[in-house]
Length: 217
Image (cartoon, rainbow, N blue to C red; front, side, top):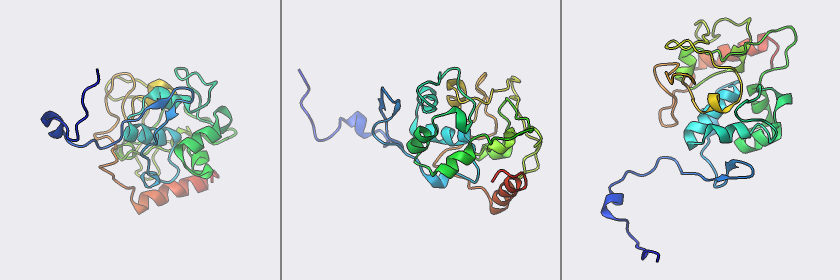
């Protein structure tokens, strides 16, 4: 027997604070949000990596890493993952789900570079990642320092030494801004939509200049 509907919640529920983000359900066949999602293009900075974009997408919507990994294509094993390159993923599926222009998503993926080795591990600037930012530019091994902050790029967790493979898989996507092995944060704070720290004009210019000088634009 179903309970009688009431126009006002019980006292215990009335005391609860309002939810900040919606609770979503996932359509089982596509594993994409079925009721919409929270995402603002203003959260993104120039040439942000797809890992960084998906971390923000996950944080704002409380999505599981499995659902995000499945966005790479129906044939991609979400636990094994895939290298974030245009030719390795279902580009249109990812672009349409995020609702971003093709050029933004294309710039977020690893560029097709010849004779330029890429790091197989996630490399990050501690100051950038404290603001929720990571760029695919940091994955080019010849780039050793952050163009914006002149800090050495890091790959190992300072707590346990783990180096996360740069693969779009459940393990990496499930732990935004944290070590996938021990859970320690890569920086002193974590990105959140309600605590935005926009990149300064000088930092945006430095990142853009680095892309242009290396012929990535």
